[in-house]
Amino acid sequence: MRYLTIALAKGRLAKQTMEMLEKIGIFCEEMKDEKTRKLIFTNEELKLRFFLAKATDVPTYVEYGAADIGFVGKDTILEEGRNLYEVLDLGFGKCRMCVCGPESAREKLQNHELIRVASKYPAIARDYFYNVKHQTVEIIKLNGSVELAPIVGLSEVIVDIVETGSTLRENGLVVLEEVCPLSARMVVNQVSMKMENERIRRLIEQMRELIRKENA
Ligand code: PRP
Image (cartoon, rainbow, N blue to C red):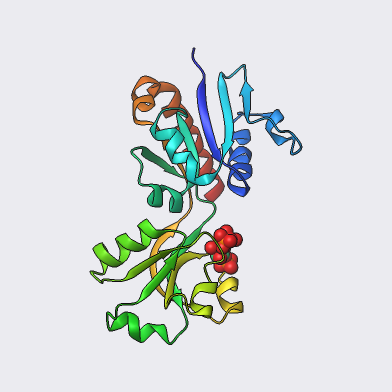
């Protein structure tokens, strides 16, 4: 039996995913050692390999088949636009992708003014404004603390993740429009899905059953 390789977006998502996997009997003790500099971990009995990667790289590893399976946020899946199968909503890490800004930007949005939109997610922002709203805007790519942009006058609005809403509140910004809901997802390489169909389908079924039980 060959090894199935699983890529996890490092951080909270990886931790919560490993907790779910443990509940269906898939363990990887080595990975819990926070001091380790090791990048890849193996479960010999189950013939599984795990590695942690930067979230934005997980869809890349999965598309090319370097990982058979990936666990990553829907935001990253949408932004990266890779060829892969999204097979399961894990039901945690729930938040929303939103257009946000000061209340004063609402009118400019509604009037279809040529506004500037700052975002860590330029592809999602572009798709939303061009293909959903049919509105021409200027997209400015940022890499973090995006809420700063409308405060210092870089852009009128932002497209960003809203979870509790406290970052917006503390900076005098509001949600103006909702782009889409987000959560952690399981993705699968398209060839692996065929070649390792039985093992991967079993894993999906076990995870689905766990999610069903936990939400019951
Ligand atoms: C994310 C997001 C918002 C914040 C939303 O940022 O970009 O800034 O969390 O959460 P809230 O609604 O609960 O306040 P992250 O912490 O990932 O940092 P970054 O902005 O530097 O990317």
